[in-house]
Image (cartoon, rainbow, N blue to C red; front, side, top):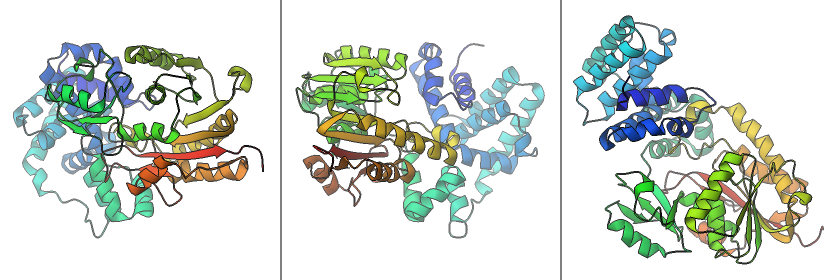
Length: 456
């Protein structure tokens, strides 16, 4: 079957349905086929994939309302074809209704059977004509059901958020998460200043706006092409990184000439930023368990012209000081987490995570923080960060750590913490904490800790 936008969207979504396959991974697997599409078809595919995942619960509400077959009995492939078609009908003004319906029926004939195609046709025709007659759960009588249905979130998560934030903020948070975020870049200050990069991007009509809190960030709202094709990318003038993630490295505040450990470096966004803040002087050890991530990190550092990063394939939970041969001035632990703070960019996360995942990861984070703390010099700095705003992964991890490690204390006197406090980006403790609602950035948590010069 020749690749087209709707077929590709279906393929990506079906692959992503597996719990072990993230949306990013599913898109990466399809990259060659996506590149064979025209720019317009690639954009449509992208809109469908992200739109279906953002609005899945609402789309299912429509399907349940107009299907004569019980929802639980609908084949998963048929269900995704219905979701794809309904998203186009209800959310994409530029797609004619007949195109949304007919292409989905043709897709069903090729991927399922004629009976399924007839069922899909009936549901879509009925929904197209009558969806405006449906009423959502009443906001005042059943807030939980209203938010879950109208904004498409799982019940367990919304119940938690209402308990923590209240109904009004939860509504605003869900609305913000479901908006399409800008692409945020971090200027490579080793090569260029932010204003100069902004001017270069403005000549390409990318919809440029400067980040409010990060001194190195630029938002682009109208890329029109892959970031890798933007002028300046191949020259290493910038790197993709959300503003909240940029601020984590600012909290670490590494200095030129220091020795710094990024204990869970992943693809290296923060490691490269750390090196940049150090003016490429000193040494950054970027450690991670997965070698393919370190390979990508090395290539990215080379693109950016960074020379002071050394990659090490190490499991921080099993590492000893012999693995590094030194203690570090500063250590960053950007720990594996639920990712519930970055649902804007990864909408599949809200359908894959459970409360058990949060609790499991919380236990792992406590172990990893304790392990990372062993590599900090007396008087050195340890920053713990996660892209989640759940208390179990945030404050509770730090509280447990400080109860156990009397050689550490919260470090709240730095200029960075005070500045972020003034910008309402810290809690009363103060911990660094951001939400998509109210700021154009992801949900992040960070705590800055200092190792005492000697045990009390």
